[in-house]
Amino acid sequence: MKLQNSTILITGGTSGIGLEFLTQLSRQGVASIIITGRDGRKLDLIKQQFSNVHTIQSDVSNPRNCRA
Image (cartoon, rainbow, N blue to C red; front, top):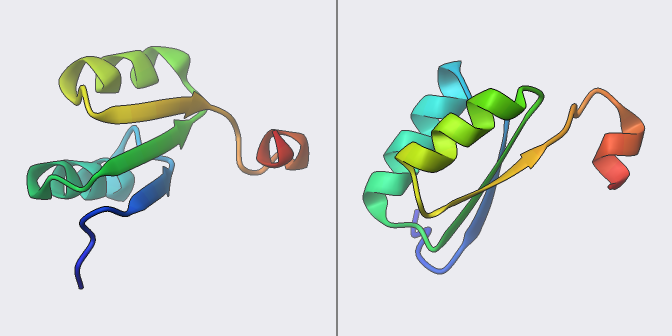
């Protein structure tokens, strides 16, 4: 699957499978990666490690956060 010039959204991207998915996509040079997570500190650390990643602090189990 070609993911170049795509925008990828990863929920729960600060740990586990989400973080590994972010790591692999970052190595491939995918155009735009967005991750969400509940912990702002973890998101800040991810942003320091992966400068090409956009982060959004939110909880996808909360409908208001999803709409925002």
